[in-house]
Amino acid sequence: TGEIAADMLVDAGCKYVILGHSERRAMGETDADVNAKVLAALEAGLVPIMCCGETLEQREAGITEEWIAMQIKLGLNGVSEEKIRKVIIAYEPIWTGRTATPEQAEEVCENIRAVVRKLYSSKNARAISILYGGSMNEKNAFELLAQPDIDGGLIGGASLVPEKFVQIIEAANQPTA
Image (tube, rainbow, N blue to C red; front, top):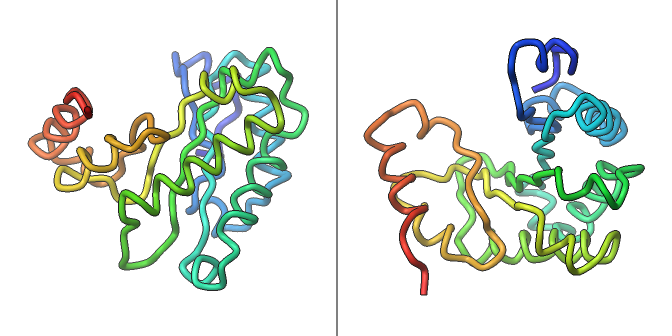
């Protein structure tokens, strides 16, 4: 998530790299840092999973849409039209002790897709994957994954318990309509 050079990850056989995770941002990683890492990952042939998210205070202040749009625009700065489809975006709200409702998560993910549409094109906005990374678990996975702009999950703690992780996988494989 931020301490290993892209070439070392490639040598180790990695295909994906998580960038801009809330833990890294809390340590002082800036949007410019995230952008440099996204560009380096793409150059090295890795698929960047670029995280974005707002704090509960930012949400309550009503600046979620603007905050996330800024993170997306700065994080993707310099990413070419040809390479945008290789980027995965993960929305991870940083709300200590609270989880977004499926409707709240969808609203932000829909906004992320709209920002990508404005920056690139409708075709590219439809082609990229947007993940939800705000404490998806076996209890809320189906409802979250049923949202039209949530393409998957960035699973944290729930991935450490095989029985729970299997339930999330099963929820992801269910038809939503």
